[in-house]
Length: 366
Image 1 (cartoon, one colour):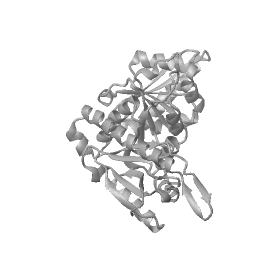
Image 2 (image 1 turned 120 degrees about the vertical axis):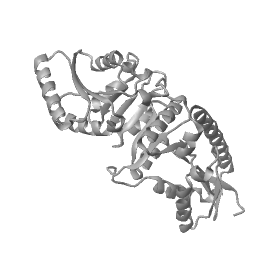
Image 3 (image 1 turned 45 degrees about the vertical axis):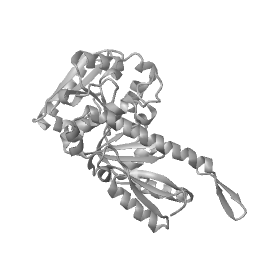
């Protein structure tokens, strides 16, 4: 292979070997090169290098291997997925994701996608002419990404004990593509226990509570997603004591509570089921909440939970006030209640709320 080479992706060594066999079965030559991400490259990152002219054929093979196929998402793999873009939000997500993975005895995978250039070809007689400037830009992007990744990992390992980091043996996946599509595709074929990601990315607008990539993952996957605000304490998991779930006495709420209690069971925290009365029959709401509590006590005698009722005509404002006054560590929402999710993530509401200061949001399917 004496032609110019380009990097298709950086993957953990076992996945790199699988990709190499898939490429070679399609007649695409490739070589593997170690990526020294803070040493231990063979356990973490390996570059798959191919000829430039094979890039257009190789990308569909890579995407099929990492995703783009259906999978039974009820069968979760034992790992925590942490998508990163090297921002302060990603740094916080990695620190918290690391603690969660360690607590659950799970693996941690860091996933980064860099926007892919279009591979344009110009037909000229019987010859295909490739745009050399495009590949120069691609090479610059590759070098900048590698540099940013190393700088990012240096920051992470400066905040986490080196022995703990080495023992965890995190895996790194770096590829060209669109972040939200790639993350969702990877989740489809490799459903994790949980996705932990920054509530926003480095390119989010100032008025947004949640970034577009995070919102896309939340609304389009059945895997639990923990969205981490910038100001969440680094040792958040050590102080994780309470999670609040907003109920509206719907049938789905019992399904949601069942999933939520099982989801947070390893963390030994208290679950508070909160209902906001907007001025309707308060006595009826109290009776329904008491009935809900009795049913939950009977079904989950081992779990610590409570049911609370508050009065307020503004639902997001009421929940935010309850979180601040009761030192809640996590706000749990379900994708079933899409209207409530949308209201929280609306910029006009977000500017008035303080949820983004330090309270992670756990979104799960029910």
